[in-house]
Image 1: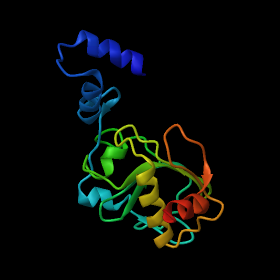
Image 2: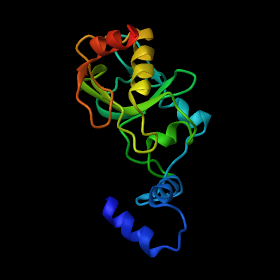
Image 3: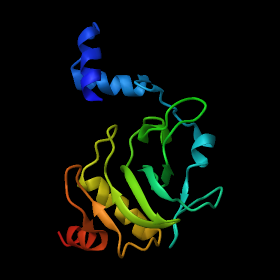
Length: 172
């Protein structure tokens, strides 16, 4: 965890601030090995098809359990249960090869394809409520049923019914 990283940083000859060093570590050689950055072809295997049920575009398999996700600048969703590939660890930064995104976090499915909860928990991107807004708007546009979905728009925040939270944001 953070303590072992802090010890590593203290022992290193790095002139970087700890958190800058940590980001560099994550990007290059993370504590568990190299982070896999996907090229366009590899990325396509993780692209989602949005409808009432959320599935992978290529394999048509519904998402299940807990998945990390990103919303690209082009409003495309990519997700994975995480883990690793032959090349390395799958992190939020893997999907877009470290480039900026409109949203990132975790999606939880109570049954295959049926979104139950979504958050902005990403150590790499550190999203805030604006990114949750982008994410929920994109899901809504994709015809994903948000009724009954809980959204956690802040890292330390509480869960809100997604549609209510979105409507409150739209009224500003």
